[in-house]
Image (tube, rainbow, N blue to C red; front, side, top):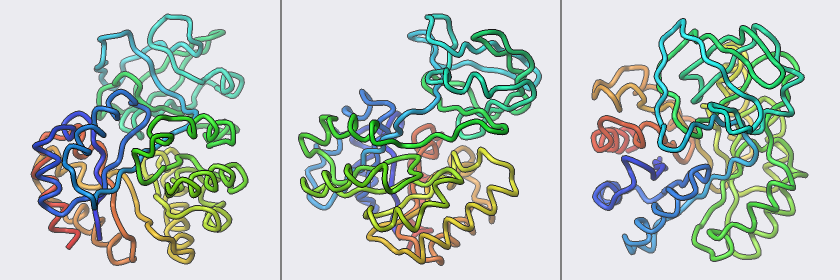
Length: 323
């Protein structure tokens, strides 16, 4: 089994990339939500001058993100603290992008989940374009451009659309063929992505569908007829109850393995604790071995190396567990 590595921040330097390659890692992911950082990363990756490297550009489409003032990158909170968040871009910070269409669905008592569930807060008041959230879980800091979502009844799911695909197709990394793969996040329908996939195939770029919502899990069989690979995105899939997560995660694994494609794997929440403590738990070890034993081709690391205290040690451990 292989490891796919996200290249940004702590992992975006030549020393790290050379070390990763020396361990046999040849699959590098760019998070296109941080486009400037991604262009820096691709320069470093290309500088390795290795022909057997694969570069994956992960495009999220439309997603809710928290915006902070320029230069303000870390907001720290404790459980019980409260914070106002604005739902329209009116230059008042912090605000949540693309939240306007959700405003009519947001209710008191619903949850705002931030950074793949590392931070959660209950909505305790709602004004015309502002909510106040009291934090119930704080395992991280709020960073600029942090992904977030509202959890509650009837809130529309995030999904990739034809319109988003049209915008993605014009990205310079694609038009200049600087990548091998496009990862489309929040795929929920084959119809929305078919034209895009066909256009990518014409220029020699593969397409991977990232499955991270219940709707995405339900669509796996039809999507498998279109794409070249899959990634189960566990981070956003956790934005459900534990019971629903367990069900949809299990269903995603079964459906993907019964519709085997060229390259399929699972992303996020691997070695998260180890990356900050250098202590490997049985749970983390078994987690990776289970993915390997089920026949997946790779696991993807993101925050585990990008924001890690021990990115090099984490790579060493992943290398050992993938053998």
